[in-house]
Image (cartoon, rainbow, N blue to C red; front, side, top):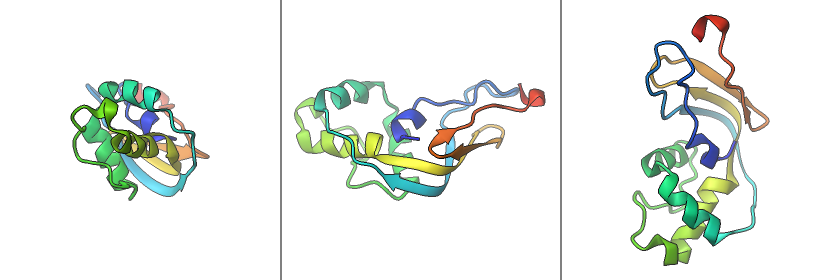
Amino acid sequence: MKLLTHNFMTSKCLKRVNIGFPLGIVAKEVQEIKVDFNSEFISRMIPKLDWDVLYTAAETLGHLSGLPKTVAPQFENDQEFLKKAHHVLLEVELVSGELVCPETGVTFPVSDGIPNMLANEDEV
């Protein structure tokens, strides 16, 4: 699961959950997988992200790779910033572990990079 995906995931489908964001990450295996750099795509995604959540997720996985704590001013023209964001968003992948609901503590397994967000019948 890429950190780009994580940034948009929520456990709001569970009972007693109002926001369900951000999901905590408990990593067992993390990989870096090279992806071609596309500055236009990254530039368009950055305004849609919760940057604090991305930064925390990258820090949790031990893959900050020089990512700044805040979005760079005029980031669209800052190729170094865009490449760091690209790396964290698209090249760092949670292969196995768990995602944890911040409100209930319910865990969702991640296996082979795929999060299983199905809840038990009594939880929905």
